[in-house]
Image 1: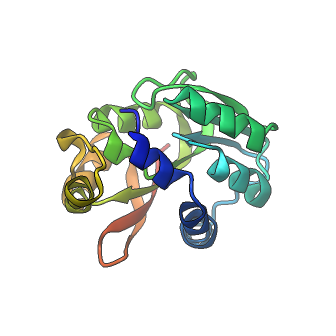
Image 2 (image 1 turned 90 degrees about the horizontal axis):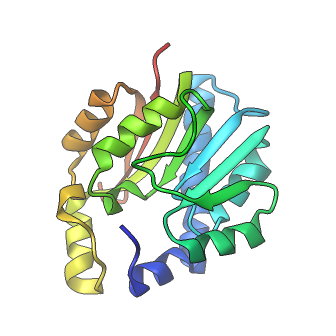
Length: 199
């Protein structure tokens, strides 16, 4: 689902970038350290990369060997290419990822799945493109918060993706992903997950 004008502004402003730089990625880095996972020189996917700010952070802080990003919106990919030219960037759909099986050692998803009606299919696709032993790091928004934002801020989230945490955890496990660690943030409004593809 493409973002409306309000959501596009919300995803391309300094507050969002500060959250990714100072909260979301550092939390993922701590989770990776606790799990004993080093992604230096590995193959990383930034699924739903938006304007490429998260892609740029991954390039600078994790130093991958291969870095791929995609987004459903061509205008976001144009921004991402200007921001992070060293990454492979393209228009793409998280529920039908144009990569072969086992192509990545890690997939990062910064708050995208609550926009995707087929979020369960997207999780199966992520499982498919992860190598055995690969990890998924996902930060998401609780369905009640998305509904509140629609009512009061003018955002547009699909009802099919208005999941609560038990439903989301069930979707991860049904996709074949093992939840290694997860943390609620902002009074349960957001949560971050580290998952692994067994193998």
